[in-house]
Image 1 (tube, rainbow, N blue to C red):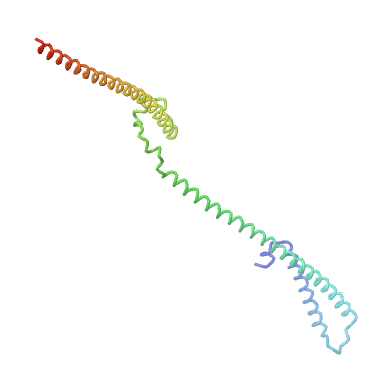
Image 2: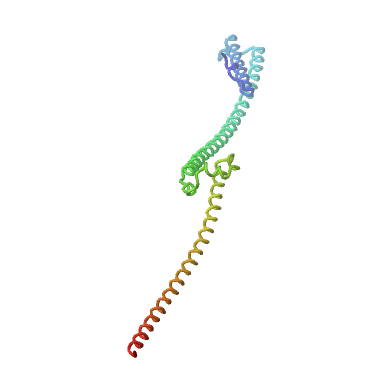
Length: 213
């Protein structure tokens, strides 16, 4: 496989073409010199001089094209290096951003796992069994877990508020009964004292009547 078949870039192909033409002109000049048996003391014929001059001009033209292509290739290499450096920086930036996203994802997964395994206080509430709750609140039988738990807690709160009202009512009744019992005890104690006083007075009266008789 030749270089022309390997290289696909149009600019590089033009450089290879100019190089090949310059090489060809050099080979032509060497071949012409060898065929003319040029010596240091030998005078060249006019036609040979013209041919050599023409070949040299063509060679200079090819060399100029080759030098121009070389300069252009240098500039293109610099631009390619610059664009490659910028692309590498962009890739490094994206890679760093991706790593940060991985770290953030791992952190968030850890937080989610911690939340899912957290022993929430509401889970320790002494709620009525689920079966009993659905018997009294069948409209919640198709709720999701979150809605169902909220409904159970709301139901438990309402029931406890009713029970607290009943407790307060019973407490007031108890306090009223205690006060009433205390009043009756005080009345009975006062009655006992009056009765004892009356008995003592009757006993004295009886003793006096007996003495007078």
